[in-house]
Structures are given as structure tokens and as C-alpha cells.
Amino acid sequence: MNPAFASAAEWIGVAVFALSGAMVAARKGMDPFGFALLATVTGVGGGSVRDVLLGRPAFWVADPTDPIVCVLVGMFVYFVGGRWGLSRLQSRLLLVWADAMGLAIFAVVGTSTALGAGAHPITAVVLGTFTATFGGIIRDILAGDVPMVLHREVYVTAAFVGAAAYATAIYAGIPALGAGAAGVMAAFSLRSLAILRNWSLPPYVETAR
Amino acid sequence: MNPAFASAAEWIGVAVFALSGAMVAARKGMDPFGFALLATVTGVGGGSVRDVLLGRPAFWVADPTDPIVCVLVGMFVYFVGGRWGLSRLQSRLLLVWADAMGLAIFAVVGTSTALGAGAHPITAVVLGTFTATFGGIIRDILAGDVPMVLHREVYVTAAFVGAAAYATAIYAGIPALGAGAAGVMAAFSLRSLAILRNWSLPPYVETAR
Amino acid sequence: MNPAFASAAEWIGVAVFALSGAMVAARKGMDPFGFALLATVTGVGGGSVRDVLLGRPAFWVADPTDPIVCVLVGMFVYFVGGRWGLSRLQSRLLLVWADAMGLAIFAVVGTSTALGAGAHPITAVVLGTFTATFGGIIRDILAGDVPMVLHREVYVTAAFVGAAAYATAIYAGIPALGAGAAGVMAAFSLRSLAILRNWSLPPYVETAR
Image (cartoon, rainbow over all chains, first blue to last red; front, side, top):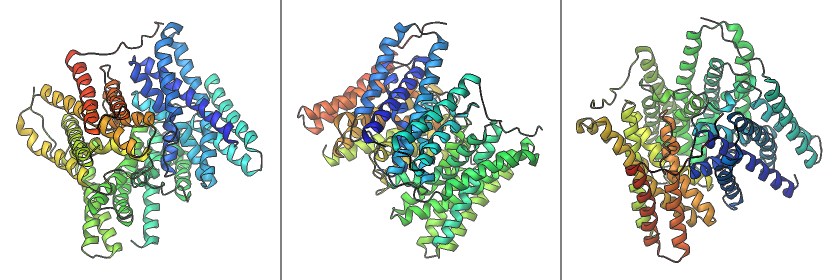
């Protein structure tokens, strides 16, 4: 991917995941630094897991822009969010949709970064799926919530489809910008439909007794 | 250890841990990609924690065989498992025994890998214990279960004994294959007896009030 | 910081965090190896997260002193603690205060280590905050407790203030020993007041309905 475009996409992904972290902090009635911590670990968590699995420093260690963005998002929601007068349902929707956008963007950014680091394409798809899902997993576990990844609506599936679509498009010779857009669209549409229509894949049904 | 033997042992460990992850996904009624994710993080989680603590890329980044095995195990259990007609008790037993086999194998493989990376023998035993236990810890936390490591039956103990038996045997000059077999047998026997006889070490009893 | 002083501070931090881990193991009625594991992951967890995010091996891999200290602390509490006849309240106080000391020391040690590794000062403060808080987060999650970081009393705030005070003092040209003492004092005083007076920052209040 074009580095400038990749950076812009990563910033948007970090910001919307940070927003989802701040919305969870709001639900838990945390204080300003709790907002900042939850926004930061959610925003940079998935990419950090990807980087340490690749055996290199987390992407934000050399350049603190992303954690600063996360702290600012957290503080903004704390100080300004109270005046928005959001209902509990509206807060929940903001959380779910910010998470969906982050999921779609990070599936592609994570896969792209792993391919750029020379990973095998299948490994890159696995790492893209981890990048997309682990920020939210860390957020939900820290907050003592049931991880969103466990919900039955298409979630891991959307991340995987976005990552696989991007990797496939790259190997088909499609320019990175187009491949990236295709991956983000695929993941986001799938997740959106799942949220809007309460879609889910058939769960495993255990034999009774 | 002989590399071929070590690889074979690691594959078996990865596969049985992936099976335990899939059984937890079954209990939670997850969808196919939920099975794949839980099988993968359980199968490669312990070894990944070991590798990042050693400051190197996770073992499966250069060669995606292990995540592929995990995804296949997860998909197999999802699509075929429903026809086995396992009762809830049988599913639980499959989970506990697959976990016990993974624990025994990874205690030795983890210690062996750490020694091979030049770690101090005591560090290697600690890393072997982490390799054996962290896959299951991540599985249980992701699934919202009480980590098996907290149960009172000999669990961490079995991993530690297997790791320490292997390291001691290596330092006593016993060939790696024999040392590995001894470590796996020690850990598995101890954990088996604990499961079968409901064995536990005396817990700490807090003074009342 | 003077390396000898930094090492001494790190040992104390590791030991008091290990003590807090052992107190949680006591609350859960774990067996001796459960004590050892919980003491170890709590004692070395925060620094390990810092090191892997910096892209290097965990600080205790080359030198197993710290895990040994943790295991000894865990075993000591298991075998001797029962005779202390601590009430449930006294155990809880020991846990909270050991955690507060570890938090204050690790905020400074973590920031100092990150600066020494060449990290940007803001990144170093973020990593110092992570070093101070993640040992306790891992401890609480493994034990199935609500993470202390979620409590409303000033907690992340104390870690952040200690880390930021240390980094600011260093950049103001204050010698490392003085800067370190200032950072530890700032974090510990703030956390102490929060514990003693039930202090908290105003939480975010969600609009009803």
C-alpha cells in the first residue's frame, strides 16, 4: 500500500478503536485516566500484538503519535461526551459501529503490514485477523465484559474475510489502494449486515444430555 | 532434542491444544470462525508467549503449518463433531484430556526451545511452564471461563515437574529423546492421577475472620 | 539512573508485586505452585510487557534472579503465611499496599528503562504506565477478579503522574536518583491518599436512559 495512505488508514483505525475503548470506559463510569488507558490499549492493542508476534517493536514505540491520538480521544469523550446527552442505547451503538470500522480497517492494515514484513500470505491473513480482533478483546477483558468476539454475530468471520480478500487481491496483482479498499469494504459490509440484521453463522449445537 | 522429533512433538501438542480450544468453542455455541480462532490461539498461544518473551518472532510466523493445523482442527470439530453425539460429560472429558496431553508435551517442548535459545536452565524451566499453561489460560479467558490453572487439582505443578524433569535429565547427560520422554511422562502421569483421583496439593487455608 | 540503584529498585518492585500476587493466590485457596505462578506473573508481568513492546527479550530471560525471587516469595507466603493468622481484612490491606508500592516503583523503573532504550519521552511515559499497571492487570485477570485498574480510586492516574514526574525531572536536568525518588514519592503519595481517603477523580456520568 502507498505508505501515506496506509498511515492515514492506520490513524483512522486507531482513532475509532480508541473511541470504542472510551465508550466502554463511559459504561463503566471510569475516571479520565481510565478513559485514556482503555482508549490507548484498544487503539494500539491489536497492532501491538501483531508486531510482537512478528518479533519487532510495537509500531508506536518510535513515534508516539498514535498513543497521543488515543489519549486525546479518551479525554475528549470524558470531558465532552457527558454533554452529548447520549442515551444508553446510543452509546452502545457508537461502541458497536466504531468497533466495526476499526475491525475492517485493521484487518487490511494488519495483513498489509505482515506481508510487508515478509510473512507468508497465510500467516499474514492470520496476523491481519489478530490485528483486527485483539484490540477489542483486550478492551473487553480489561473492562470485565464478555469479549465481543464471543458474540454470535459474524465478527471474527468479517475480519478474516477482509484480510483474505486483501491478500487475494494483492496476489491477483490489483494495486494496493484498490485491494485495500476492497478488503475494508468486504469486512465492513459483512459486519454491518450482521449488526443490522442480527446475522450469524449457524452455531455448533451440542447433543443434549 | 532431535529436530524432527521435536517438530513432531510440537505438532501433536499444537493439535491437542487446538482440540481443547474447539471443545470450549463447542460449549459456547460459537460459529465456524469462532472455532478456528479459539483453536488457533489455544494451539499456538503458549509457544507464542514463550517466543516473544525470548525476544524473537512467534514460531509459526515463518511457517504457517501450525495455524493451518489449528484452523483445520477447529473446522473439523465444528462440522463433524455435531455428528459424534457426544454428551456434555464426554465433551468435558475430551477437553480435559486433550488439555492434559498438550500441557505435558508443551512443558518439554517449551523448555527444550528455551534451552536451545541459550536461556539459563532456571529461566528455561519457567518458560517451559509458561509454554504449557498460557495456551489454556488464553483459551479460558477468551471464552469467559475460570482459567483451568486456578482449579485446585495439580495443574501448574504437573507442567513445572515435566519442565524440571526434562532440564535435569538433559544436565545429567541423558540423550534428548529419553529426557523428553521422561518429562512428558512425568507431567502427564501427574496430571492424569490428579484428574482421575481428584488429587490436589493442600491449599492455603486463610485464617477465618 | 545509576544501574545498581535501578536494579535494587526493580528487585523491590518485583518482590512487592510478587507479594501482591501471593496474597491473591491466598484469597483463592491455591496450591503452592499456584502461588509460585501468580507471584511470578505479577512480579515480572509489567516489565515483560514493556520489554516485548520495545522489541527485546524480557528482562529476566538472561538472568533468572527475578523469577527466583518471585517463586520464593510465593512459597514463603504459602508455607509461612498461614501461621501469621492474618484476618481477611489484613490480607486485603497487605495486597492493596504491596500493589501500591509496586505501582510507584515500576512507574519510574519502566519509564527509565524505556528512556534508556532510546524511546521518545512520551512513549516512555506510556510504557512506564503500562509497566506499573500490567503486572496487576494480569494478576487480577488470571485470578478471575475485577482488575484493580477498573476501581474508581486514583490508580492509573498515580502511575501516570509518577512516570511523567520522573520523565519531566530527567528533562529538567535533575540527577536520576533524585528524579527517581521524586517519581516514586509522587505516585505513592497520590495512591496512598486515594486508598486512605477513598479519593477518586470524578467519574464520567452517563445520561440516564
